[in-house]
Amino acid sequence: MNGPRITAIPSTPPIRSRAVSLSRTTRLIAGTATALAVLTACGGGGDATADQQDGPVTLTFWGWAKGSKDVVDAFNASHTDIKVTFEEIPSGNAGGYAKISNAVKAGNAPDLVSVEYPSLPEFVSSGALQDIGDVFTEADRAKLLPQAVELTTLGGKTWAVPFDAAPQAFYYRKDLFEKHKIQVPTTWAAFQKAAEQVKKADAKARIATFFPDDPTTFEAMVWQAGAQWFKAEDDTWKIDTTDAATTRVTAYWQGLLDADLVHKNASFSPEWTGSLKNGTTYGYLGASWGAGVLKGTLPEQSGKWAVAPVPSWDGKPASGMLGGSTFAVTKDSRHKAAAVEFAKWMATTEEGVRARIASGTSSAFPAATALRPAARNAFDAGYYGGQDIYALFEAAGASIGKNWAWGPTTGTTNTTVKDRFGAVAAGGPTLADAVKAGHDATVAELTRRGLKVEG
Image (cartoon, rainbow, N blue to C red; front, side, top):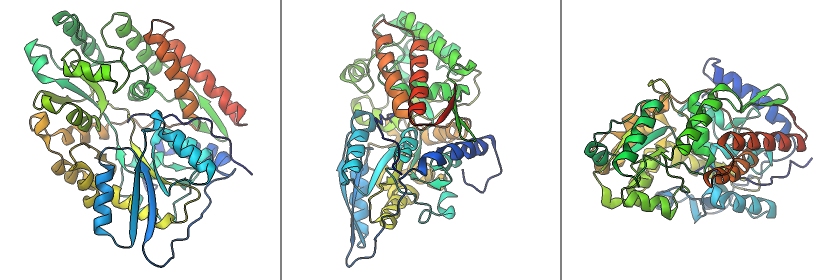
């Protein structure tokens, strides 16, 4: 039978081996697998592989992550049996996912695509991807961050090669913090105090920005706080966005907005970039990949930025995951084995990681734990005053919460929340209203797809 129709797959900007003992995360994913089995049985996951041919296999790869072209060029220069044609597409929420979805529907999708963890279940549920478990083995998965493996294992099948983890981090203008004698906050209470100090020091300046167009930054915050929006038990999805952790984060950020302690610019917009350039934004609540973004966007500010752990509620290490990407084989590709071989080269070899990070635009934090020294060595940390930012990412990665899972309708959830966040930024409803609207839209979409849902 045909899979459920995929209506919209917005992105997030920009993650355990099955051999481990049953942790809370493993039990959660086992439940998720049961619920997703209902979806994956309805189409998709077909094997269109036909790698045997005379001459090299030619693959097409669509993506947008920094350094992708450099990686493809390096692969093509070192391989004769597989040749990769790369097309840079807009990031997922800027049109990339819609382009991929339309190509799948038209039957002319590329062999390999970038898909971020939050959107993977929706692509799987639409039947857009192939199960790659026969060519991406247990030995391959054992090399990777356990959370990454679990987020790509759905319905008991393997749907993508994890590339990077994306633990949260706080980037801040070290020179401005020192000038105004502002301590780098380690708790969210201290972050609010620091925000008040920034505004007092410069009436036009703010400590950071609330991105009304990017619900995934907010979701990383609630993930960090211990929330669990999506949970699958047997064949039922349980949706809960009214838990204590979500309520706490929602009220906190509503308070910052009400007190005008943060900017309200769209992520990576000219307004946001301009405020960084002119020094009226002192910090950026981002993820590991943000180090490369700042370095590439603001080269003239080299030496002025530093990186700190994201504040937590009790001052102890805690992180959600903000984005993070995978490589998935589309359902009609006839070169699954070759596509996975290329994806593995990008994600699990020193050559692949070095080629991406040496481009100077990427600070990817590999899901392959053994490759982090190579990533550290490839990244020129001079921009951050020689700070060992990968040591910070390592600690943050180890603190990623293990309760979170993404549901099969993330596109619906995030599109609704994004629309309401925009209204909040314009002085309309509250963040709590936006979260409730996302909850209601999610329940409605799951019900429309014929799935059991509570919440």
